Length: 525
Image 1: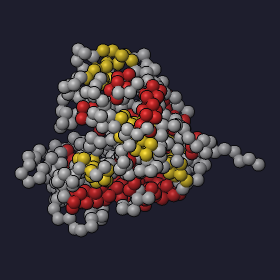
Image 2: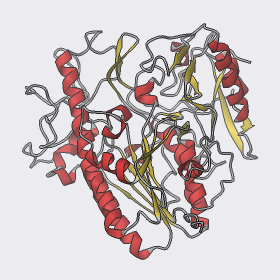
Image 3: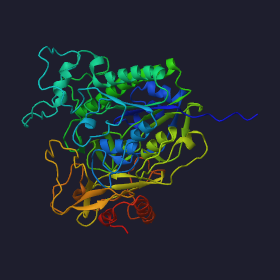
Image 4: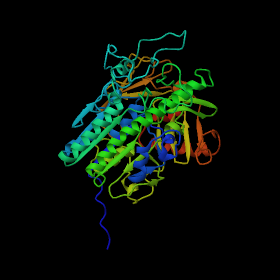
């Protein structure tokens, strides 16, 4: 007798852990730091995806991939949901499906992050992480516990100028226990909501946008110091540098580098511990039989990994090498045993298509993903032949899972335009003023849309939006054979394989109707 097919998930939970390094997780072979709960999830309930790669970068563009399902880095650098598109929550709302956002991610609630939360049925914002403007002065009763003394974000080395304490440097004085830190609090709220949703809602979708283990790499005891190879004397270094060449360029000592890396590990282990609360809720409410659980990230974080004889830190102006661009993905799927692996090439827009598949939802705007459901149920062994990704105005990258090609600008790095009707991209201390459209702007249309959009062209000498580095990367193409050279030590640019990758990139840009100026900027037909 043929057993009936599993009905598939009725509900779904996405847990996005920001800056989660695949190569540091035990389930992916990491041994440096402990991640017992993520490892247990992979071993007992989830399918481990081994060829998942980044799409749009960094933080908010990656969330756009997941919530809207379309790559946006070829049109704009970082921004809110636009007038021509809707997040997946809009379609779920039309079906009366309850949706919930629980997050401590400050970029969702600042300029450039508008409208991602507004179409959830409800949302809860845990205050105090990184750049969240939560408090204006330190807690007068702060006496140093549990937070350890730490160097301010803007405090330089002796003799260097400093700026006032950053938002987090103030916020951390209000944390009286580990449970007050944003990451643990987010996980507690998520656990509580899951337990209630199982009793009160017929169908539901939860998105947990957890900013840990993103910097600041700040933890209380017993996490702080647990991975130090020798006692650390002095203020904690919780703000990692963004450098291409940290130790080698004399910007930090080897001891400081080990300390910062250990602090990342401490935060990774702390958030893994609290992620266990979600697993416990699934166990107690018997949700494995009807609810998909997706654990993912937006990108990794360089922590001194050596690439091409440089030690890289943070997210500086380099291509998406494997530590940041090859990311973890773990999915539990009702009816499918845990502990399996999937070698198919996947990327973050596919998560949007998977959520849409679970709830039988369809977007009204053009999307670029494919559901992972057929991979999880072994109906197919591949859903795409290539994955496209990159940052606005930077490298445009493509991979077939075996070869990776990062194409840089040529000539003067232009033409380049920003397409937006919200015009509210990220601002920070480097770009405090928004780059506004001017009289050169015209009205154009996004692929598949009849909504006019402001298209602002940029020229050499213009101030560009933050993250756009087109003029700094001219001619710096990269080509790596990941099978023979997984550490990307040998740039094979100029070899015959480059022509095939250029053709693949050209086809990929045509497939999504990317702006023609992108091909011109990259010097391809």
